[in-house]
Amino acid sequence: MKMFYTLLVVGIATILLVTANTFTNQFTLQIHPSSFVNGLAKYQLFALVVGILVTISILILSPDSRQFLNKGQLSIIAEKEKWLGINGKSFWKINGLQLLLFISIATGIFMFMAVKYTNSINNFQWGFIPLILLFSLTNSLTEELIFRFGIVGGLFNHYPKLTILIISAILFGLPHYFGWPSGIVGILMSGVLGYILCKATIETKGLSIAWTIHFVQDIIIFTALFMMNVKT
Image (cartoon, rainbow, N blue to C red; front, side, top):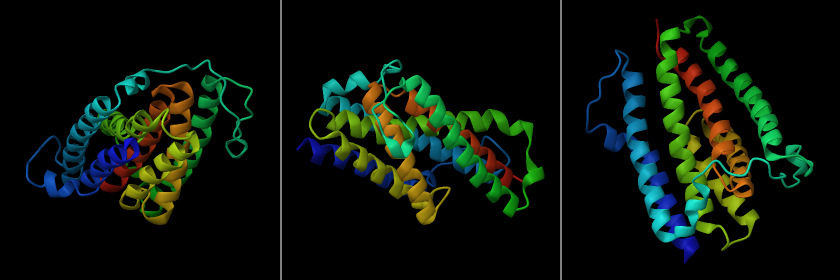
């Protein structure tokens, strides 16, 4: 039943995020001259509410899940995973930094190509930074609460670690078919990222590494999105 209720909660949250426009179109929020930015702001507000509701639901279903709502044990050894370059001999705080670097490079290259393709290289504005940081913070927090805390907190100690990792990867990857990057590429990239972030969450018993890596990726992605969609 833990599996059923956890998947139900996360599944409903995922559907709400994918269909967010249905709800956000019902209200007006004006924080910027750009309709693109205002649309993002409405989505972030809506998604944050969904993330908070998921957190409350999982805490009610699995009170022990509150152990994951902290920074975690960064000095613990990361379990070996060859395809991620983790040798099983170093601390998570070291592996976390390494993964942050490599993932950020990959994300940066992909988003740079997208910006270049749309001829938006010269469209960066320093005024973007406050909103980029705000949206990156809220988006990464919301998705970590839903796809890491929601899944790990609901299933930990009830199902094998690999099962939880795969579920997190799939449920995090699928909605990104409609995100950025989108399509199959978006699913694959987000699925791999979801697996990595879930592994960090389970092994450290906290969200700090997953949230930090996610936050940095969102900064890169939102910077590119602003350059491509908010014209000077």
